[in-house]
Length: 225
Image 1 (cartoon, rainbow, N blue to C red):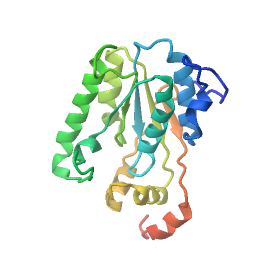
Image 2: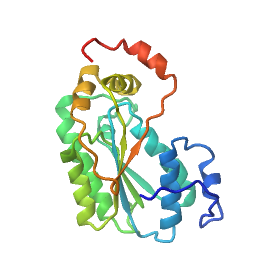
Image 3: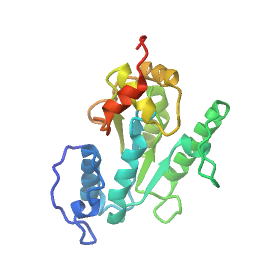
C-alpha cells in the first residue's frame, strides 16, 4: 500500500475523505488506508481486496478494523469481517466465551466465511469491497490460507502487522484484551511472532494505548519476562 498524505480529496458522493473520517480514525495507518482505498477504488465498485490483521490479543487489531470501517462506510464502500472470535460469541447475549475445544472448528468457520465473501459477485448478499481477516495470524502458516486464497482469486492482499517489541509490551497488550487471554498464552504467542511478509504486502502499525503506564503497573511483569 503506498504511503499517502492526509489531503482533502472529494469522494464520489461529495464528501471529502477527511470529513467522512470525522476524527474517528486516530491511528495514522488506518487514516492512510481509508484515503488510499477511497481514492483508488471508488470508481471500481466491483473489485475487492483482502486486508489481514496480525497482532497479539489486545494489540488493537479489532479497533483498527472498526476505525477503517467507520471511514469507508460514508464513502459507500462495503466491508466484511472474518474472525474466529465471532464464533465464540453468544449471538443472543453478546458474551464472549472462549473454549479451546472449539478453536479448530471456529477457525474453519472463519475460513468458510472468508471463502463465501471472496467468491461473491457485486450483486450477491455476501459481496464486500474489503474483506477483513481479524485473527491473530501470528505465524506465516496462519496467514497463508488467506493470502493464497486472495492470490488465487486474483484479489489484492495487504496485511497490517501491529508491532510488539518486547515481552513487556506483550503483557501490556494482554491486559488490554477484552477476551481475558491468560498472560502465559500471550507470551507463548509472542515467541511465535513470525517475520514480516515484505514491504509491498505488509504495513507495520505502531500500537497506541492510553494510560500505558497504568497498564504496566497493573501487569506486575513477572521476573521471567
